[in-house]
Length: 192
Length: 192
DNA sequence: CGGCTATGGCTAATCGAATTAGCCTTATGG
DNA sequence: CCATAAGGCTAATTCGATTAGCCATAGCCG
Image 1: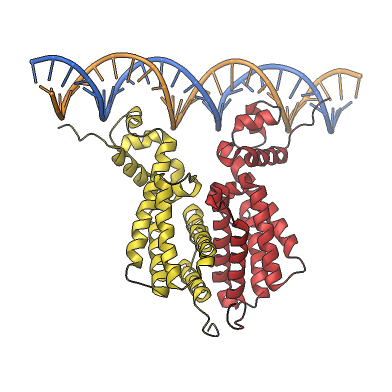
Image 2 (image 1 turned 60 degrees about the vertical axis):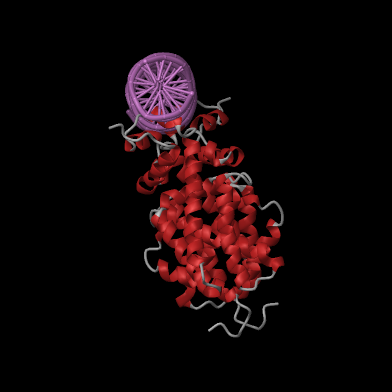
């Protein structure tokens, strides 16, 4: 009846779930150990401490997010791709506020780091969308960073306080996407 | 020879400076007390603990930011106001990364709360800009939220890791502002 | 089969930072 | 000149993270 031994993956996954449930602020080694039916120090056999756990959760979140958005934009292009991306992004962030919060403060080091690589994959999906709009290569970086600010800002606001968006969050989000779409689309005429 | 007694304001101001210097993560009661030439427990006569301190720093940051952007847009309208706002915003965030970080995770409660009110004033400045562009009242909320996501996202990315924006941050920021400007401006023709 | 070793869990102990309790000094104002 | 409250201090508590060092066992080799 040995409950299978834990692996680092188990610990990180459980940590991510815990963060989603109790909030990133309250993610603690003790609570996590309890959830895994183990004593706190045992976790250190799998993770290098709280900071390491946090970073791994961030990497997990970014990886999952990358998969979600990649799947969403499959077979879509232009506005459709943008809308699909946005929807997938918002859905993920809303469903996993704790996980995503882990990515907000995390430092990106450089290539080879899980979190960095996962972030790069998300950016690659954004870039694919932009290419679909025919954005000039010379403007790609700028457009990419702009999209990144927009989505990250949305996520941060959503995750932290659900910014008083008492009502109409979805409409505002759709409006935002429409705004970006109009801006990226080769000009075709009056905006309405 | 009594070094003037401390006030809550002194403590918060010093805390904000400390956060800017050592990073928000390392803001600690002990370090702050030391900087103020006082023992740790003494701080509790002025602030209600670390969480309270953080929240007050967030409120201070938002208040200062509000003053900075309000001053910047004075006498400007349209693109100029937007550009001035953006410049002031970026300058503030870059100069005070620790302070701004305090605002990122902070929960907004409701009217009457310093942080909430200060945030409302910043939003009011944004709204003024949007009105200058002739944005429909019905779209105001959506546009406001969009701007908020964009600026907050920029700040969050900037503050946390200075997102690998090794080069060209300023150009990208300008591009972003230009993008928004084109999107808000009543259509006048092809974008170039 | 019987022992070897690495892994993963445990208990006990340490550390550090926040916070609380309770005392003491002094500026202030009646 | 004294009463008092504000603001500092020391000592003590608490709680969470982390470390040290021990123990059981699964898988493997001779």
